[in-house]
Amino acid sequence: QKEVEQNSGPLSVPEGAIASLNCTYSDRGSQSFFWYRQYSGKSPELIMFIYSNGDKEDGRFTAQLNKASQYVSLLIRDSQPSDSATYLCALLRGSGGADGLTFGKGTHLIIQP
Amino acid sequence: KAGVTQTPRYLIKTRGQQVTLSCSPISGHRSVSWYQQTPGQGLQFLFEYFSETQRNKGNFPGRFSGRQFSNSRSEMNVSTLELGDSALYLCASSLGTGYNEQFFGPGTRLTVL
Image (cartoon, rainbow over the protein chains, first blue to last red):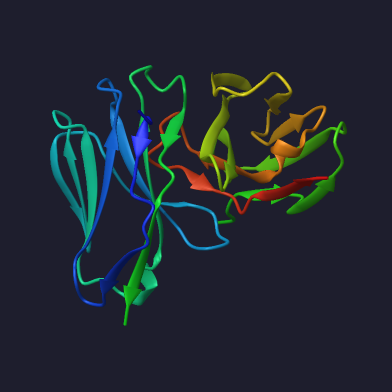
């Protein structure tokens, strides 16, 4: 089982709708979870991080964490064409960060005008 | 405030050669992490330096090494290059040792022929 799994997509969502991106992980000791956005040909940029079970909202973005089920998700409300990018899920494993961030391979999101 | 800078942006080498990549973090940032990004493996953590000390290391062979200077600038060295080392090498800086304020540079695209 891969450490961090994401559906590669592409995930196509109409403009104005809610885009839902999911990520599952295998290490139950994982502590901190991050969502990055990467535009084609650009470097990743941090959108949000979440440490505790539940929801965390920041503007149009909501991160959801469920440690019991070992998944983390990112919701994008009122999706815009500028949200079209690859979204990377990352985490700090139970080693206390000794292994650095572990990334999924990303989900390619396309917002259709 | 200037962002993370990496030099060179593009590099072509041949198998067996060695290469040194440079990263200048955001002013005031003391932590620098290095990542390798390939289409097949995605984004993988190489190592992290804080105050001139390597804190964490990913699962890469000893051919990959790095260092950090007193001004927080960091260099990464790859010796005896292999074709599989062709990748985008990204560095990221953060103020402290956490990953919740990590900013990526534009990357160095290394091609090994």
